[in-house]
Amino acid sequence: MNKELSCVLVTGGAGYIGSHTIIELFNAGVQTVISVDNYSNSTEETYARIEAVCGKNPVHYEADISHPGHLKTICKAHPEIQGIIHFAALKAVGESVEKPLEYYRNNLDGLLHVLECVAEFQIKSFIFSSSCTVYGQTSVFPVNENTPLSEPESPYGYTKLAGERIIRDFAVIHPEIHCVLLRYFNPVGAHPSGLIGEIQLQKPNNLVPIITMSAAGILPAFSVHGNDYPTRDGTCIRDYVHVCDIADAHVKALRFSQSEVQTVNPEIFNLGSGEGVSVLEAIKAFERVNQLVLNYAIGPRRAGDISAIYSDSSKAEKQLQWKPAYTLDDMMASAWKWQQNLGK
Figure (spheres, rainbow, N blue to C red):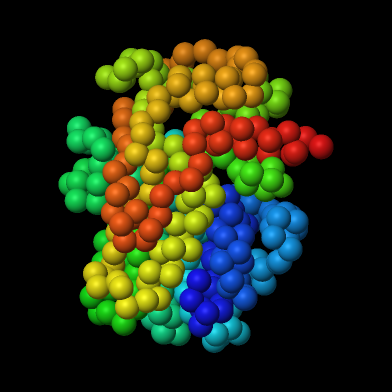
């Protein structure tokens, strides 16, 4: 990390990807990391876990960025902030179909308030947590940053697509602020130490937490959402990437935005492994790596799901010098290690 970069603010820092990114920021030499979180889908105990992993604790505030003024007060108290990494958002595809207004209000209001602070306090770097959902249902594989965007299948996807457009318009009138949009695919796994991972305060919506909680006996038999998709085994295909690789990419994106290398504003990068893995293949990988047998059944399709998507991440490899270091086996082993530690 550049020596002059000493203070970074992370929204949603107690969350899954935010907490792992804070660890990577500290490991990269950032002196002060500020976390802002309302703990709607996380817990303040996460900071103790961060400290257990890297020996450092972020400055943290309980605040809701969807309310005007909350983040502004924090930025006023910390004029030394040089970059903001924005994670805080509701993120469950299925839930967004059931509660669209809640998702639009929370995710878009939050983004607007963060950008207002970025402009008012002239914070040089803004890194946005986007998603592969902006590509919608595509027939082009793998997708790269130039793949045409399709209509998203869920309100959650729309919040990311609208968020990207908002940032594009913002960058036009604020060329001095370097914005980077990271479209990541399916972050899974946990820190290799097993000391920190994804906290499930509500019913899990994503495959790997459902698998680990089922294996631990916390959930009964789980359903695979459909096996009649036009894929090799009928189940949805996704691009799984380890959460620590995603966190590392955010640090590299921040370094990129702080340098003179960035010439396009905003710049966009896909973050994925480049390999499509079906739901059944992911389940079998977990069973094989951890020597367990899972109890699952085929159920109906889930609203908002697309049949397949996976990434061409060569642009991130070339410009950010980022490449996934963890395999699918690493993802499944670390996820189970974390779940076991939660039970202690």
